[in-house]
Amino acid sequence: MTRLACPIFVLTALSMAFFAGTARAQDNAQPKKPPTATEAVVANWNDVGGRLVTMAEDWPEDRYDYKLAPTTRTFQEVILHIAGSNYDMLNKMRKSKVGDGRNDPAVADYKTKAATVAFLKKSIEDGAAEAKKQGDAGVIKLLEYWDGYTEHMGEHYGLLVAYYRASGSVPPESRPKK
Image 1: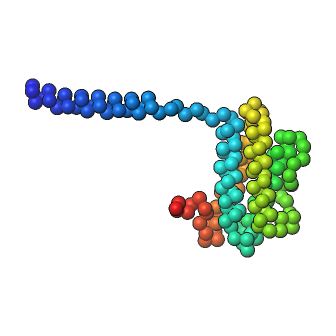
Image 2 (image 1 turned 90 degrees about the vertical axis):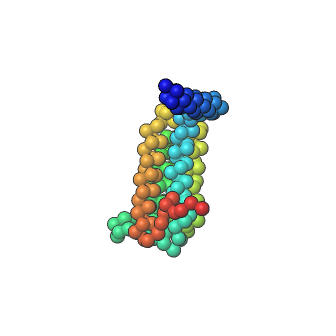
Image 3 (image 1 turned 60 degrees about the vertical axis):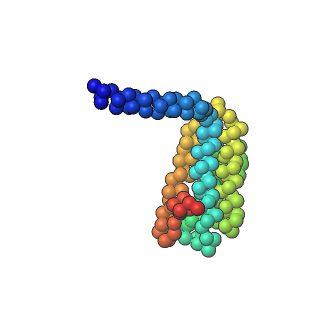
């Protein structure tokens, strides 16, 4: 009985020490406050938008006319389409004209990589600003727009990953982190 009592005592003592340490760690941890609707929408919008901006900045300017196939948009046309669609959403929400809301803005209107990147960045910044202006009630009321257009950006992000892969490049998100 002495042999059995000793291992049980040790096991019990170790278990108590482990659980006491776990309880103390939980007591010291502050519960995380869930994001508001606006914070969640803006975080998602900026996450996808930021990935697209990174790609637009990363892709070589001399390859902005690259296409996956003759019937697809060029890399630049995809970026312009995303930004134009972002403004289309904002115009529908606001019921007023802001930015270049054409579904497919002309490359001739954005002749350089810098102009294209600036247009995309501005559309994302303006979208985030609009969500913050709307606040939780507005964002929830228009959640279908926010979800749909954020998903639209995400779908084109996936398409641009294919542009990278087909051209023998590695997308920025897939590169080793330094």
